[in-house]
Amino acid sequence: MKRHPPVPPRLLRDPGHLLALGFGSGLAPVAPGTFGTLAAIPLWWLGSQLSLSLYLGLLLLLSLLGIWLCGRTARALGVHDHPAIVWDEFAGFLLTMAWAPAGWIWLLLGFGLFRLFDIWKPWPIRFLDRRLGGGLGIMLDDLLAGAFAAVVIYGLGYGGLV
Image (cartoon, rainbow, N blue to C red; front, side, top):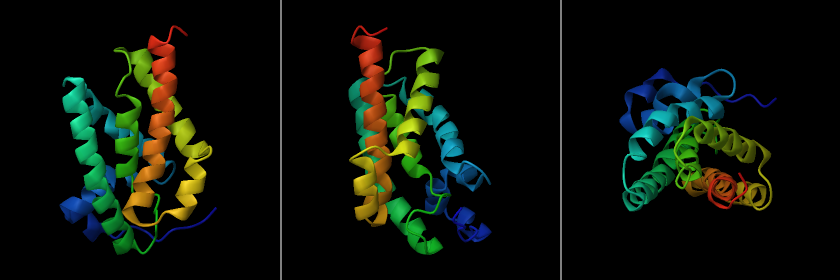
């Protein structure tokens, strides 16, 4: 298992780094991406109260902000996609849940599907993950994992598969 440098505590005092680190959820010693996704649930819940167009606007804003946040924190840590950087999980999970029906079962299914696609990285996610650098590269693989999961959720929820 590849070891990454520890996150200096001073980064948590910077609001931009704190966001990129998922309010500290990315500092979990195991499965930081999973803990980052868990930390995104309250943000999703707040966003789910919005109309779809406002939700998607918020998602776009958070994704664009994430390109800058994740790139900046990666440079500060000296690692392209340090596991502690989990803002990309926030955006990917929010995309997963954009068209999900209401209910806890859909939240659990969305969580599981997003984590599955984020870890598995089927083509073209893995292809892009290996070729794109900077904040865009960090964000894009999770947004694609979120899109894959969203398609499955939409098919199950509205496509007559369930």
